[in-house]
Length: 327
Image (cartoon, rainbow, N blue to C red; front, side):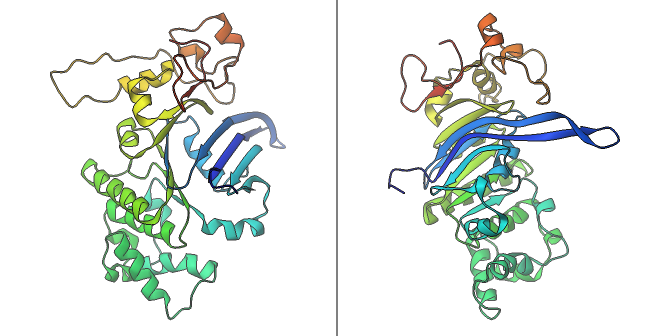
């Protein structure tokens, strides 16, 4: 792989789930959770992925770590297509790509002590010996800001923020190159969110990690991301660096999301863009542009022709939008 090649290169990825019914539970329809997503991520970079609940963000993240086997498309990680690999072939690569889940209470086995949870990656991948694992576990806990004595306790004995630190420690155990962060702070109190975000940023600087940071809070995503991709109904509708996206968003959906960010200054007036209607069902998505039923600028062309990602006018480096028009 060349020095300039991306660490992660996703090409036209689709994840369709069968909707079964009848006596024989045959597939009667398909839920198009992810429907043709392409994106890239370089070493040491953070790509934010934002969108409303149900747009396919978490499904995309789970597909990238092969918790779901994609329907079609490529997931090139360091040049290797993860979508084609068997579970046995995937095992060594799982050391390099890990995931932090949204709810640490659900993702940590309550019957295992913290020490057992953190030892599991080493046991599965046969790293080290039973004698040296306590030292490895203590080092992991110290790295995420928890005392070594935490290893003897159980997840329910910790606060939500502390449990998420344990989840981060588990993701770090195998020295990965990429971590998929699936809404890692959305279940935490606001006062704790900042601590966990700062921990993630410190770890990135220290270890050179790449993050795919999935969230619905655009203010959080702007704080941690180098670039941002906006997702709607299983599609990427806009990508740009963080500053460009917030200052010069080109897609009507992105503008509506940004207008919903709370303004910290009470006297400052902001214009809220309220979208009409509901998000269409991914089981029966609209033809043409997926956003056209809710777009105030939709035309007949939008209803029949799906827009491809393109550079908006005036040309902006590394900025792409899936819209027929320059609005």
